[in-house]
Image (cartoon, rainbow, N blue to C red; front, side):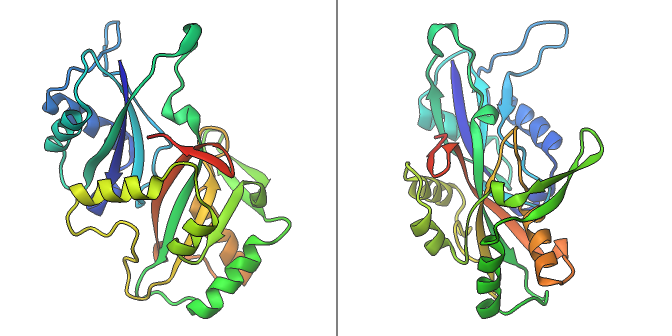
Length: 270
């Protein structure tokens, strides 16, 4: 049987790369005592896959992982067992058992289902930038352009690709509340994810400004295996639009939603 796990990545664990996250969860699953299935062959490994790996330095409360288990557990017990094996910086916030595929079809993984993601981008304290009353209308102007040409690096081929960011930039806003109201999703994601995170991480803000200056931008971008657009690329293009130098260290990025389906008809994975 297969189960989809939702987890949060926060605090100092934001500096751990995806390969180390995979190794961490392999060890955590073993510590939890959960009866996970292994692949066949000379070098068996846990049957585990992740959706849309998170970049180093980015926090999230909406990461997904698929596991194949040899036995079934109550959802609450499964979450508790995994959380007991977690360390500070990771927290399991939900799970859902997946139905078997129909008519012998191949199972769709979380990675193959993801089509877009939501990000909260916060300006860190101590870094100069436009004042909020000027920043928000300028960002709206930037997002409203008919075309946003950018150059994207393609790591696999060690090359560059020219693309129109406008085609993959689905929505934006200046605050979480206005963004939620303007760009709802078909499932009540915000309540489920927010409440789940607060149950496991006492005192950690879920959808709140993390910096005193309160300068935030919210954006929905194309994500997944086909067209994955990073918020850093948007910030860099925005700074070029303003004619200012882009400083990657001035911004904290938090992913708070991942969806399947076509925008605006989106559904969450749990």
